[in-house]
Image (cartoon, rainbow, N blue to C red; front, side, top):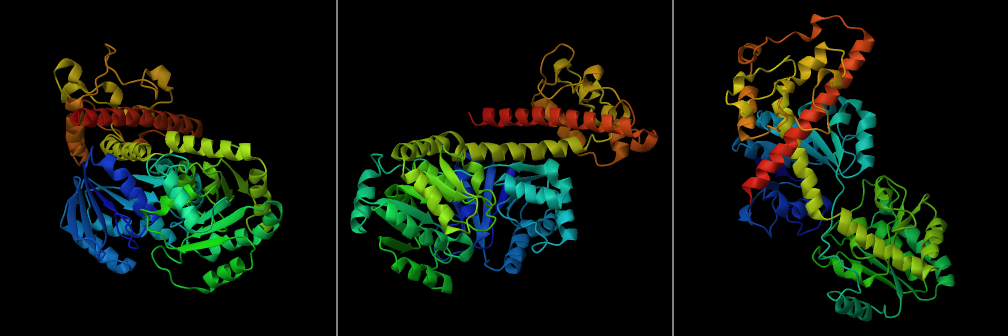
Length: 516
């Protein structure tokens, strides 16, 4: 497919100035480009050209920073270019104008924050957005559950896809590639023979690093070799002074242990500070979607102390790769969890090793990209299925050459809408079996997909009726009881998932074959 990925208006892609969303996009592009023709639309930056193609990915950059300006430029570009699918990052308010500019494109959405909250988008607009998008990817269960609570009808479209990390760049400090870097950083900053606690993130009240600093006097009485490194600034590349930053520095000056404040660190150097550290602490006070620093800490082999806010605890297995502070407002609670790890060096080592293994097995970018590709395949499948929502059956007259025919069993909605029998009684496909003909031979192939697409393009009920052996039946033709309706809805959901799964697998197979 020809796919457009729309980043946010705040930071450019690639992430030359940082940014979780920008890092996410750049992490998955090397894998997505193998399956699709990808264009990334983002904001312009003096260090980057307005248009370029790198490694078979097209980049288009337009004026941004302010949402209204970015919205206008995005729509202007889309009106002049056609795409099969448009994937919008974290801006549900872009969905309706994008739909107006691209009426034929499928739209999917990635949510990295609570942008469906009522103070961010009106109830009326949010409902229209949810109707237009085919799938919604969230970076944590927390983000998905917030959307579900506000808009229950969104549930079938939601899917959590945890982010990833470059495990070849973020490495433990003892690895051969990082040993010299670790030793040099520690030596240059007076950290030799210290147990280094690392905080990395924006310096703002809701990130809560002051709680960590206020926990250190208690910790330093018990552990004499401590040091603290604070990596971050007010806003990514901006090292401006704020009241909060001044407060944090004043607190740090009162400590009797070394404190290193790096300010903003470029994205291509941040991994060095993770390698120089021994323990990572996330102090978020707000309901954070899921800070990507957790993935980076795991990849660097660091035990983690994080907070029970938002999605952060979702990647922590307590006692295995880290610990969770239930009340992050209290510095004493941070002191307790940090002390639990520092008091047991074997536990500390094991947590770091477990974190590294989790990063390798669960949180690499190829897995994230694979999950995104699956979502896009499902979006394509959903569009194909929409044409059959009220069709009672499909005859074999779509194709006449034996095993290339579209099976009768693809009449998913007719049987579901007009029968109270179970899928087993109706001899229809179940989610864990392939759709087959009477011979039992699986028939998903290019010719079948072509037939499905052709039928999907027939817009009117009259054209659909002519294409199938039996005419469509109105959904309300029969009066049904609530029990029958429940059975019908169950069958409908069961069968729709079966068809979607098989079609998605087929599409994946076709693309894999094309790329070999």
